[in-house]
Amino acid sequence: MTRNPKLSMAAVSDPIKVALLTDDPLLRTGLASLLAQNSAITVVDDGAEVALWDAGVDAEKTLARLSELKSLDIPVVAVVGDAAHVAAALAAGARGVVLRDQVGPGIHAALAAVRSGLTVIDTALASSLVPATPVANSNEHKSNGKGRGELTEREKQVVQLLSEGLSNKLIADRLGISDHTAKFHVNGVMMKLGASTRTEAVVEAMRRGLIRL
Image 1 (cartoon, rainbow, N blue to C red):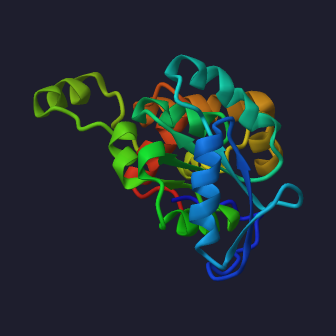
Image 2: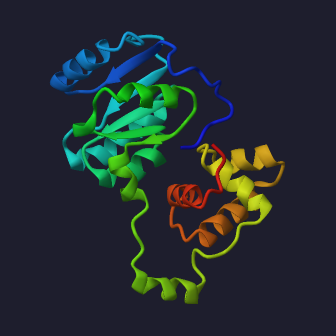
């Protein structure tokens, strides 16, 4: 899990105001009933602190619908039906991802963590982000140097900011460097971590213990 330091850390037991965003009336009824069992959760239409957003059951439409997350101004826990959509949901701005058929009583902990600025992923989904590397390929990776470089102190700062979802421009502003330099460092981080996307870079940095919680 990673934490956005700009958000205050609320206690897990503090009441949570949650918005349910789904086009599926059956799922909405089920989620509302589930959340109602926890006195620390209140489902609201206005003034929500966290949104529980459903990607729907149509896999072909899911990726298109993920763009909706960028318009929300509160932290979002995305409910997806396919592990293949986890990275896309995180890249779109979700601060938590859970499988549609795994939503249960533990959702309260996920909502509380996301409200406090953490990023959470259902255990069943974690392996989809960090696939096991076959032993047979280990020598190949070492020979081409991909994903084996040590990050500089500046690059460690950059990957920490990447974990907060900051753009290159915001990274530049935070570190007091130019946009061009920020882009250079981001590219360097991705190369050294063997990542093809910013999300993959963050996941690999988490695996190496380079990101502070």
